[in-house]
Amino acid sequence: MNEEEIRKNIYLLQRHQEQMEDTYAQIDMIERLIREHDRTVETLQEMIEMEKGKEVLMPVGGNVFAKAVIKDAENVMVNVGGNVFIEKPINGAIDFIKKKIEELKKNEEKLVKMAEDIRQRMEEISQKIRKEDVQVS
Image 1 (cartoon, rainbow, N blue to C red):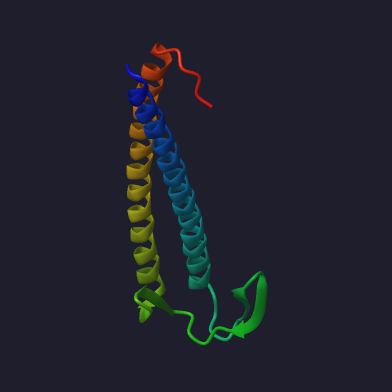
Image 2: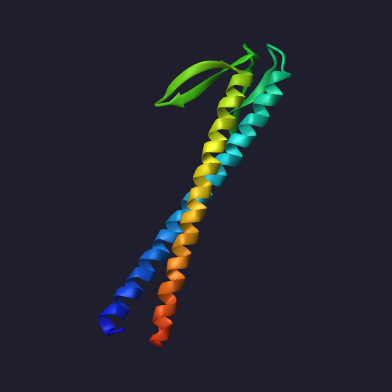
């Protein structure tokens, strides 16, 4: 392997490292979304037992909550995309969220596979470079 090929392989190794970091950041984001959706399903399941007129704490963001009264304990508003909300029965909302969780898990699996493929390519490039006894920082 000549010097230009070695430089090219080192560059590829660095690019793959960046791709790997981006992929793991996406996986982390998906895992956070899955946890958030799981908590939403739990909350919705608890709402099934709630009575109309019950006072609850409503999150407004930044760990700040407001006291609110449940006027409708049977239906919720669901964002179906593009800031479009539709009213759904709680069980329908739970099903909707569970489908989103499954989609997120499928995307996570694809990203994990992608990360494994990138890691394999990085190992192959590293072995080529090691054969040339090149010091890589």
